[in-house]
Every structure is written in structure tokens, then in C-alpha cells.
Length: 323
Image (cartoon, rainbow, N blue to C red):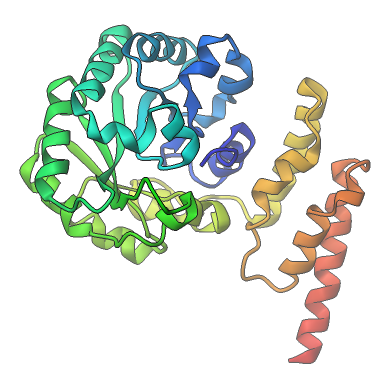
């Protein structure tokens, strides 16, 4: 989720769900080792619980970055062992780390020692790499990393093909094998096993929770964020989101204004994350077109907000008249 689940995206998602755990985009250890802390780690107090997702392989650097994440107030430090992009392969981290479980274990132990139990250290990974579909491969990976102190594994139920596929294709082409994730939970009942990959509905979440401890959604939640408004009530023992879509948008406009004053952030850098908020509503396309119109960038967000609602209402009335 590089360039997706940034601070502004997480602010929107926290308006919709109070109890779902949010994750940052992957931050490389190199970026933090060179001191760009505020750029990558700044967050709003409302984001908790929120996890810092790290990309890296050197145990010393991972330990340093885990301490930095802890100091910034993150509730979890997560090591990404699942990203298949060329960029992470060149850096020898992400999914290619699954071929080196001992190195991952060393990194996890270094992070666990660094935070001294103050926050959990977790791992996100695939069920295999390339065409290797042996269950023993992922079982042994989880076993080795668990011995180093990791108790939570977020398992993308696809292999990562490191050659010949783009990151997008790696989310679609390797077959989903949910049974592998279910088997991990049976073999490691003392660990928290969360499932990721291909989940698009509340019904699917419900079914997976019969077999595992948690479910992670990425792009589906990003593109259709309103579904998150029911998660607290449906899965987490809380109340449904008390806000309407209009109220969520109004709060986002106020946030845009505050971020412009505090950090000089243009409203367009924030609005891009909420373009799926009105998915399925009449006039949603016209509303999206306004919020994504680069020609409107010089205007204040409150003005764009009013224009978006005018266009949405006009498009909706035309649609009703045409029914």
C-alpha cells in the first residue's frame, strides 16, 4: 500500500471505524535511518490503534527503527515479508525474505528486544514464493519466526512470484489458497493468525473468522471505504459509525483546512483518499470528478466541497428523471 495508507488516508478510515487496527504504508528502514522521521511517522492521535509497517532486512536497522516507531507512539511494529515489487527485491527485503527465515527471525528478535515488550512485533508474509506450493515451506517459516518472539502473523493467501509478474499481477494471478492459512491456525493454535488477500465483503470476513483470528483488507477497503462504517458493530463489539457520509466529508474538509495551515498540505493530497466514499450513490461520479479536478486546486476546499455537492445533486436529479 505504498503511497496509499498515509496519514490522511488513515484519518478518513478512523472516522469510519474506531476499533479496526490501521496500518501505515511500508516505510523502509533506510528512510528512517537517515532521519526522515516526521515525514514518514507523523500521525494524528485519533489513529490509534495503528501499526507501523517496516521494510528492511538488517537486524540492527530494524531494531533502531522499531525503537523509533515505539517512541512515536505506534501500537505495533510490523515487518513486511510479503511485498513482491522490484524495488523491495533490489533492497533484499519484502517477499524475498521468506527464503531466509533465519534472517527474518534474527530481525524479529532484534525488534522484540529493542521495544522490550512495550508493543508487539508482527510479521506480514505470503504463503510461498514463486511456484513453491509446499505447505512445509510456510509452516517452517512461521515456526522459525515464532521462536524469535513473533506472536502475530498476517498471511496473504497467495504465493509471491518474484519473477515475471508486476505487483498488481501478484495480487491477482497466483491462486488464492485460503486452506493454507486455515491450516497454519490449526498447527499453531497459540499464535494469532490473520488472513489477507481477495476479501471483498462482510460475508467473506465472517466466513474466514470461523477459521482464523483476524482478517486484513487493503485495496478493497481503500476503494470502498464506507463498508468500514459497519465493522465495529459487525465484528469488534462496538457501535456502528455514528456519522453519515455527508458528515464524514464535512470532517474531512475541516481536516484539509487544518493540514493546510499546519503543514502546507494541498487539499488534493487528502481528497484523493476519499474518492470511493460515495460509491454506489446517485451522482457519485460527478462528485468524484469535482474532487479530482486539478483545475480546482487553487480554490479552498470548502468551495470545492460546495461545488461537488451541487454537481452531485444535479447529476442525481437527472438520473432520477431518466429512470
